[in-house]
Image (cartoon, rainbow, N blue to C red; front, side, top):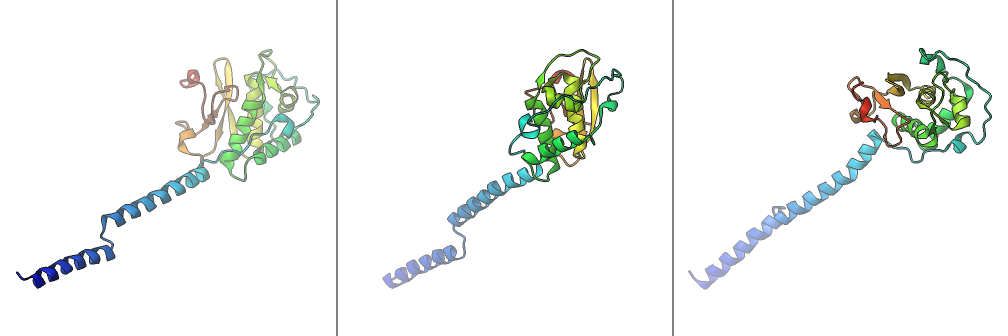
Length: 217
């Protein structure tokens, strides 16, 4: 083979390589494309997750909601067999408090608002053992800033119902907490029956968690 033929063959080989690069067949192109797609997925996924499971930007204190409150509503009911008698979500003070809590660190997202109500009760009220037959009203709890499990549950259930979230009481031996019906919430919060269980006296429990000892009750 002559030198001219060798030279022509050499040039032809370079032309093939150049054509491959121009057509995007270079491995480097695939690496760059994979990197760009990965960055887009990482950027989009957290935003999508936040929309599905938003968290309050800030949890209000009692002073943020009711700076000062005198105890004027004294509950003298001793029928502990019917806790529904303590549900009065349309009471003006309860309704106003629940609305302020829901909007304090959230927009109009119901999941975020439910979290705000739960964390407000969990973080602001002190557990105080009380006389078994006495249950504080939400107004009394907001004034005294402490109570037993009955008082915490009554306050939380009223706040939830005040913002349109259906709440019921869950009774276990020597304890009571709350469950709410919020079907749009992520499944990780739901129990087997589709409810979200909330125990505001459990200071280490997050939204949708209850102490392990109550799991089988």
